[in-house]
Amino acid sequence: MQVFSKRKDKPRLYPFLTPHDDFRPFVPLKPIELAISPDGKEWHSIYDQQDLNRVLCYMHSPAPTVQSDSTEKLGINDGQRLNSSTYSNRDLTMSFWFNGLDEPDMYLAFDALQRFLDTREPYWICWEDWPQRMYYGKAKFTAPTYTSDKGWTCNVTFTDLIGLSRSVGTSTSYVLGIGNNALAEQPSYEFNSNSFTVMNQSDILVDPERRGHPFKMILEGSSKGNMKITNNTTGDSISRTNGWSGKWELDEVNPMLNGNHDGINTDHGIITLQIGANNFVIQNFSGKVTVDFPFWWKS
Image (cartoon, rainbow, N blue to C red; front, side, top):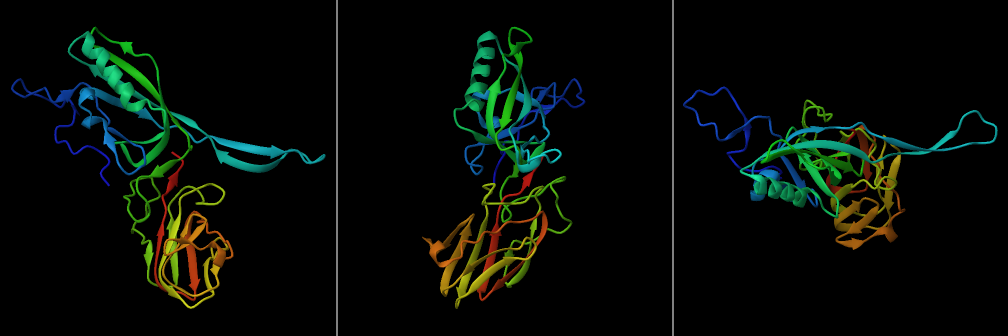
């Protein structure tokens, strides 16, 4: 998946230069490339927008997770009982710098930055110095601070609507970086046996039913009947009575057989993934299993 620009002449911080070196490709701060995407698949880098030439992001700051708890008072019990806990919105701040040709150029650059980041619909955003994580939300601008008659700085607040970062790509198409619970040996998410371990390298439980997390388990092969998928780590399971052949898929909580809804033939079970190792057993099935889901992190 191509997230950032393929340009070879990306802006760079001034190195040590001699009087004979060309200084034009360099800028007086360390720029951070960012890219946005409406769907997390097709990306648009700020460096590929011609009208944003020399508009540079030079700082972005992660924010702590914010938990929202629902509690209830029970009789005369001390304290309160925790009913539920969710992650709430949080604000990520990024700063931009521009130095152009003249005053009209300065105004046009700010207008172009708004056009790029300020939308009615939420989108995904990813930064070069934190490249394996993306955030879903919307941007809000502050008024620019004019540093001259041709330059400005500006802060933009990106409201993370999910409250967690998500991996760019999924378990079957991703690159894990430092700090993303990466393991010394890359685990597989495709299996040819009926007993296997799925590694959930997230900071949280993957729960497609209550939390709405994307999750797919795809079985390609056949069953003579009474198939049962069990996650022995969590105790979750789903069963199907009749025999079948082809492609059976659990898409979040929706069973599908060869592209058609198949819930009527199941016990409507669900599958979740605990943090770390999840030990699976599938009864009465022969074929290939693929487990496809994104990872979620707090920062």
